[in-house]
Amino acid sequence: MDFDWPTYFECAACDAEIPADAVQYDDLGYPECPECGARTGPLARLEAVETVERGLAD
Image 1 (cartoon, rainbow, N blue to C red):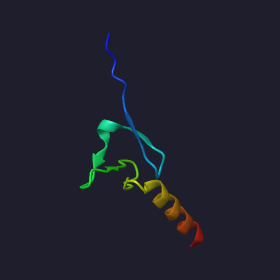
Image 2: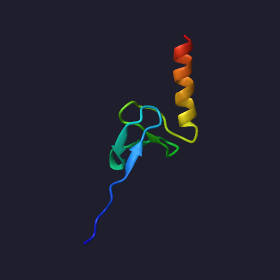
Image 3: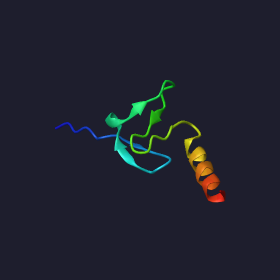
Image 4: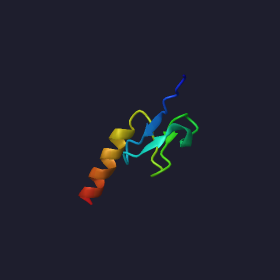
């Protein structure tokens, strides 16, 4: 019996876990979170931390 393991996308900004087939991609091929709309790429986790730190400083 064959079984396909589902794959999930984990958002670096909001930590949402979404089935991979529900995720859209930008023009460069990076996934965008359907929950919060965050851009995802090589530095996405760092960008999310910087945004939160700026929000706390304001």
